[in-house]
Image: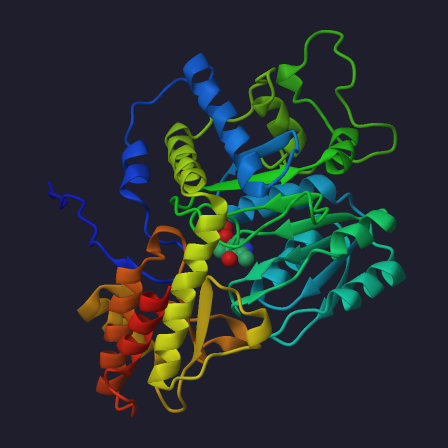
Length: 412
Ligand SMILES: *Cc1c(COP(=O)(O)O)cnc(C)c1O
């Protein structure tokens, strides 16, 4: 019989746009004993998690809970539940994850209308508002923080335009929640999806979502109660007259909200350990204070950017819409970006990311998210990056990067 080696993953410095390093307190929470999913002690933890999610999403929505699955499952749950076949869906695209919204909206039977911005920039909100007035969509889906290009899309005016046009606004805030302000109520966002393994610094595997009553009305009109759960003579087990049921069973927000409601109507078996992890991650974020947390992300971004600029490498994209938690660096001409990444990992235990599609081989992406967003990590990365670039024959002022970053820390 073959003896398999004991599991022993290397401790890495993870500076990617997810997954990122996890606070030891979250890792510890993941190892606690299992509770039954209807145990009052466990349902109390579910309720705490909803309360904390409302704070992090800055909303008074009744519904704020995690979908079990990676962030993409949250996006798919929201779109599958809110897009009825034939609905008009407007999708402004400025990077890879905008294309993902388009992809999913089409699979949900939506008639997609897209508008595209060149990668590295974002939309002027007025352009999107004009398209909403012209296209009269039932739903608008847009990314807040586009990790593929390192840009952040302003959203504060789009929500009100959606209300005037009677459209629902769905926002992918997977990369921003917990690191950059996401103002669900103040910006009039109807449904928002967050991520765990980005700025919340919890392992990948759950997708926090929130949605308001406007979204809930649409969901309930399409609600279909699972056959094996219907009581004899129970009313309203099928969608309203002429409405189509939500196509997915697993990613059905109508059933999921019943499960998270006091009725605790059984759906799937809740991911006990992941919920412990998420609850601990949220607790740490709220104890730090959201404003303090945003300021921490900005501080380490400044130090990183100062260091990279002193090194003389070019930052990618329009600086006026830079996403604070992802910094994109142009790979100098003729340099093998993958060789640099491999050397960082092999010799320094540091992981940074490449990018996708048109940016593959053109930029590196450095994340400063959650527990990974620390001074020691930024300094370690800058020193290592400089050494690896020098090793690859890049001409740069040796030593300048760390001094520039240290200057930022001394000021800040
Ligand atoms: C990471 C990311 C996703 C996908 O998240 P998964 O957890 O991998 O499913 C979606 N949108 C954005 C903007 C992201 O950064």
